[in-house]
Image (cartoon, rainbow, N blue to C red; front, side, top):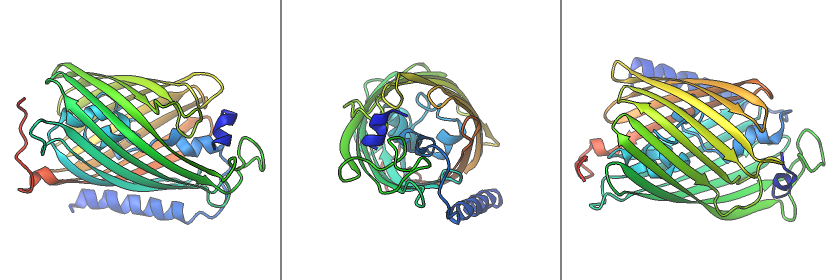
Length: 331
């Protein structure tokens, strides 16, 4: 990793999903030893992942909507007419990392179809070693200029503190940060999504465009192509990272999603990370109905520094009640 980063450094089936995830989370929480992984592996570029994003290994920039769009491409928030409130938990057992957060997105209430969202996440990474803690707060707006062209922008506030040392001890690669051991800054993202046809979506998104100059908030430019329908999605994304490593590196991601029996999304994904020199595979499942969704995503690095990410999420669909205007798809 760059030295600048170190310096700046309900039903039966859904019940089974929730029980399995709870056991995994409890197991990870019980760990009380320092992680031997490089810090950047557990940090995962500061990404906040939903279960779908984890299960599709990050290939969601063109097809992601609602809460997922808030974290990956704000232009995707108006793709569906919804008002979603959700919570997410992430656990990385080998990296001794836990993240908990939630948020809400709305593309219904505004008569002009302006979509908005906000979210917050708290992360604890390697408390018996690196001892890194962070608070991530997001706010985004998006507007559909037509049924084919969507633009969005978001603001991100990161407050990060590191009080311990990583596997290399008091070194630039894994020791504490400079000055008061804290990163506290605001940056922003922007994205565009184009849908030339109902079955095709194209996206372009840049993150941390204020160029903080370190790997805690890496400046990236990425895009995605998604094809599919309501019951099937295939997406491929490519991302250029300009600041995490000593040179510009690429991450290539692909994912597929099938909606079985109208309620059960099944997902698979793959990612190649040039900077970390790793390959990872992923999968996930969930239960989705009119009022809520429960989802689980798991990713595993199979070549490189071995790490596992487990992401559990719950979403309540407020538009299914009479508390919001009735969603429409007309412009």
